Image 1: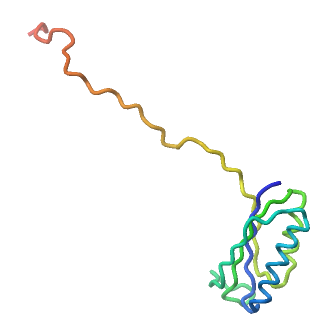
Image 2: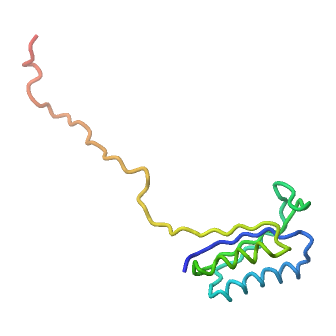
Image 3: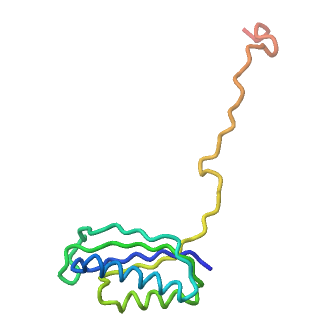
Length: 125
């Protein structure tokens, strides 16, 4: 199973009960498909960057879940067909590997010693 994140913008005309019902519907859809909800973040009503279907605001909701790749298309299809959802984005989160830092430690050369190597006075005049 892969980890996905679904972000939706919901019409601002919905009541709190209708918004909660929509969130439960999307959570139920993921679990019906055999997935597991990790978290749900309700950001609340926010101003949109540009009008969408004559709405200047919308409720932002983000879901993180685990689901098999064969079943994820159904989540996008339902989000696309649900009238209350103005916009949605569904992305697969990539596995993060621990890499060493891009900036590698530079080897510090040892400071020159005060020791004289060879006879300095023996140089030609």
